[in-house]
Amino acid sequence: MTERRKRLYVQTFGCQMNVYDADQMVTGLAPMGYGPARSAHEADLILVVTCAIREKADQKVFSYLGRLEALKSRRPGLKIAVGGCVAQGQGRRMLSRAPHVDAVFGTHAVGRLPAIIRRIEAGSGPVVDVAMDGDGDAFAPFTDPPADPGVARFVTIMQGCDNYCTYCVVPYVRGPETSRPPESVVAEVTGLVRAGVREVTLLGQNVNSYGVKEGLPGFPDLLGRVAGVRGLKRIRFTTSHPKDLSDGLIEAYRHIETLCPHIHLPVQSGSDRVLKRMNRKYDRKRYLERVAQLREARPGIAVTTDIIVGFPGETDADFQQTLDFLDAVRFDGLFAFKYSDRPQAPAARFSDPVPEPVKAERLNTLLAAQTAITGESYARLVGTEADVLVEGPARRNGAAAGTQWTGRSPENRIVNFTAAPPASPIAPGMTVRVAIAEALAHSLRGTAIPLDAPADARKGEHTHAA
Image (cartoon, rainbow, N blue to C red; front, side):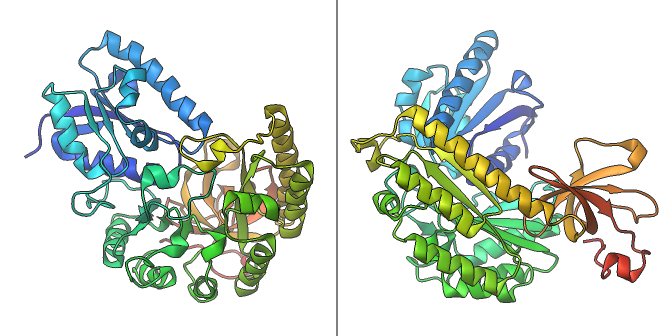
């Protein structure tokens, strides 16, 4: 029996795993009577899911909590609970910076959240729970899929990390690597597909080491099992550590049709000297070899990456090697960040920091170089066709030109397109062949090819309902 309806607002910062955790929290609190609030101002409970990977993310969290203090002063009955990586790292200290918070819960406490909320509703707060253990299945304590899950969802397959890169706080706030049983992963994916999901992204700090510690079948085997879920159209995953990228995973790209031709493979630096100081356990030669093997196994595969600029001790020569590396690999896209010290991470104690103005200059230079590479890559796609998994209406809809839709290509490129008559009716979850007519900085534009177009115009019948 459910309790009376209460309003829940969730503010999520950071990575896809936090998005997944937030979804689990919403599902777990639904039997307690919590439904969605349109804004924080109308909520009875606000959940803040936090990220500690960079200093800027940490600052955003406390800035947001500062704004909530004023809201709570006007509505004393409002409850505020903070979870995620900042909560795990700060623990009870968070209450000294944000005394208006009612509960602080860590990365392993998602399954215990309903009990935590009951305690603060009963007036026994503040509650702090940052124990790194779980009740039952720590990965998916709440298994019912949401009523409207959308077209694409995240599914966590493992959490924690054993790599201890010198810049990273993840091992300290997510704990050691722990893999979820494959049967549990497949069961969750099956439920999501039955609810209408057509694409899943498998999540882990290092999916390449899935199952190793537990003696489970490895990540390529898991991909094969997930690919066997009837009705699932696309599989993606993140993040993939270069040092553990196996021959088996490369072969999976060759043989598993539903595995999308895209890999996010964080390199972090193009300098071997910097990579060694980062404790990444590979060099640029090894990385280039793996990229070449991936491109041979799956021609046209999109490779994206992460890069940190201004790591302690990074010289101009080191940074130039990173720029040269961009030219060598020709990444399809990247996420780039200025290095920032993180509590507990060893690099915070390095004695040769790079000045902030130098970091900023290097970041701008790197982003400009990648923008040029991406622009050239996208320009070559004009005049080609892409199979687009429709996510929904585009934000900008032009009625005169027909309905505008948006989705992603198998390579994870955003494609906005027009479906003008006589195109077949289009809905989220369908896969539509689109003729690419224009390349923009971060997306492509085109027109849906009608089913009744001549065969030479559509190059195969690829427009279909999922």
